[in-house]
Image (cartoon, rainbow, N blue to C red; front, top):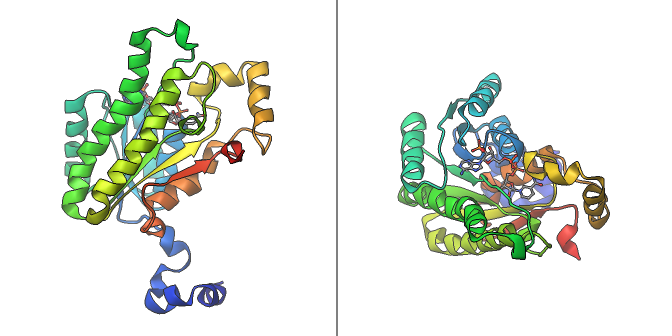
Length: 273
Ligand SMILES: NC(=O)c1ccc[n+]([C@@H]2O[C@H](COP(=O)([O-])OP(=O)(O)OC[C@H]3O[C@@H](n4cnc5c(N)ncnc54)[C@H](OP(=O)(O)O)[C@@H]3O)[C@@H](O)[C@H]2O)c1
């Protein structure tokens, strides 16, 4: 294995042999804040980062779910703390990063994941509902990224990973608010990547397709909508939450040190056509 890698990447092997193989993806000694970590994809990604060696600051508005996660991460031999926070609250986001840094000493990774959806045709969507979705999915990402980014830029390193969606790339009926937020997240990702590039802070996004979580329960419990999504997906199946692990570990690790401003699609091919 080592010999094969040496042949394939002689420049890496000669200059930085310690970077070969799994060491590239080792997150030991790093600390990650994961928003929306209490359940669903955030919970899975928090566990994946911990399995790769990271300590985790878990946040959402539900302390009970966070405590369960913290206990599970503890069983993996990693440090974890629960810091409940509503990401739509500017002061709470600043306090979250302060508390996280005080508890862990440093923050290396932010996974901006907390999200909601209200699926209605635009003609039936109230302005208040539209604003609710944007406030969590877009403004919340901005607030958490800015708070963590201040710290990362000052320390001269960091990774911000924004969870977007296939709906950051393509449209779908009844997704006016959600798709607006996800398209904007991709643009925010690019701007932050540019602004923080020289400070060695990489900012990327992940674009998942449909995964079974509370967020998509109304879709997978409706046979017609479930089957539409399955048929529309080139791989003819929904994603499994653990299938996001590779993408989030890659973008959190030194393996992605020269990748910034990118959206990595984890979508079974949905956006390939
Ligand atoms: N599931 C999918 O198929 C899919 C596909 C593409 C993209 N995504 C994206 O992936 C992310 C996670 O989705 P999911 O499916 O895992 O959703 P989920 O199961 O509904 O979990 C959402 C998480 O976000 C938290 N949250 C919501 N509003 C919050 C707020 N204002 N402040 C803090 N935390 C908040 C929730 O906790 P509390 O309610 O307790 O605060 C929960 O922990 C979202 O950004 C979503 O858009 C999901």
